Amino acid sequence: MSTDQPPIDPNRPSAARIYDAFLGGSHNFAADRAVAARAAEILPEVTLIARANRDFLQRAVRYAAARGIRQFLDLGSGIPTERNVHEVAREVSPDCRVVYADLDPTAVLYARHLLGDDERTAIVRGDLQDPATILDRPEVRGLLDLDRPVAVLMVAVLHFLPDGPALDAALRAYRDTAAPGSVLVISHAAPGGTPDLTDRVADLYNRSGAPLVLRDAGQVARFFDGWRMVEPGLVPGPLWRPDGEPVTDAARYLTLAGVGER
Ligand SMILES: C[S@@+](CC[C@H](N)C(=O)[O-])C[C@H]1O[C@@H](n2cnc3c(N)ncnc32)[C@H](O)[C@@H]1O
Image (spheres, rainbow, N blue to C red):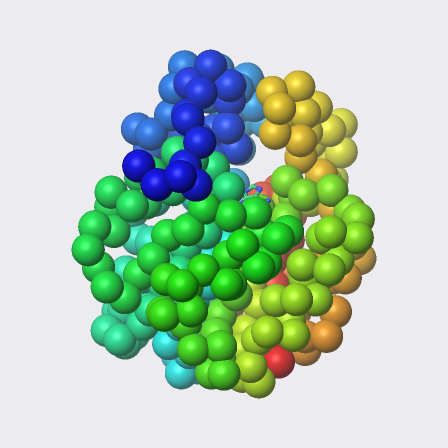
């Protein structure tokens, strides 16, 4: 095991494994399932919300690949589940390269296992708030040509990060690193019309050691500073370029999603 892989503590819930439990995955422990079950009691739509978020991620990846982007930096990539970024992107073009990065050792371990010896993907453990620990890794430098457009994905991750200079500096660093033609993909948990319920879910996460910061549209829009929003702008996740059945009551998905371009 590489030295950047701390031990996995099954008794301490992790955001990555709780999300895996929402998606019906098998890479989670009893402590994670307990938090997931409690969240579903408070907010029964939580599984639907997680699935809708994955659907947004896939639409955004297809959008980026259709624009001609062939390299992807997936920050807070989570535990690999079906239809991952490289699989979706390669349906558009088989030469797509993907770097997955996550702070959670479980996510990194399973991603390494899943990706095996795929030479056009890499998984690194790193904090997205410390861009150098990700961008300066030799395997990342070897895979991504940062002089060419890249899709930077921060999907369902920024709500685990508090406001502050570290986050601001990191967002600036990714923006300044991204060549013209790059895109930034963000989805983020929002309070929606039932702040009482979402506050209770946030409180549950806080108590489980994975603090959750809900942000409204103005606060999430700020993460796109220096990027031009592509149509339809920052919207409830299911309304971002939907490709299936029309969604009613999209605000109940409690997710804001958007894509910016350089
Ligand atoms: C809810 S999951 C989202 C996974 C995937 N992006 C998706 O939308 O399907 C959030 C992930 O962000 C990771 N994460 C949280 N804080 C992070 C940080 N500071 N740097 C990198 N990853 C982080 C968690 O470990 C978790 O795997």
